Image 1 (cartoon, rainbow, N blue to C red):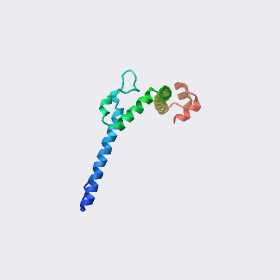
Image 2: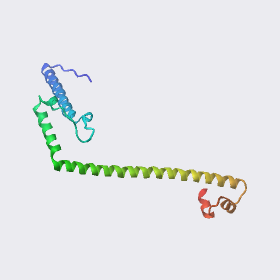
Image 3: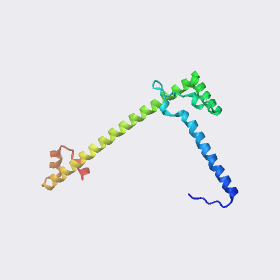
Image 4: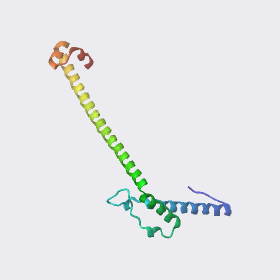
Length: 151
């Protein structure tokens, strides 16, 4: 996108706004870097190993880190985190069971459709060979009223 600014004052304001936006993006990236998933503890996936020296020059970041460490050290918050983990695990387990049941239902539905198709083909072949409905039902071992639904 090309923007043409004829007025030098507008040009200066526009440049300032762009620099300010870059500063905001850099700030956001710095804050989000605290939650970098490559820094998780192998023993506890909910804990991160942070190098506080990386943020030593920034008082606001030091405050954010202090708040996060205080929350992690608080037993009530840790208990809530554990309860949330258990709740989400239960939801995940339930969703897995539902997905497995859906897959089983779809497999059974396909098998029934294949069975219906083969039954339909057998009935058509037998009727073309000159058999009547009762003989076809007896040959295929299906009740005579069910026979009508095949056509």
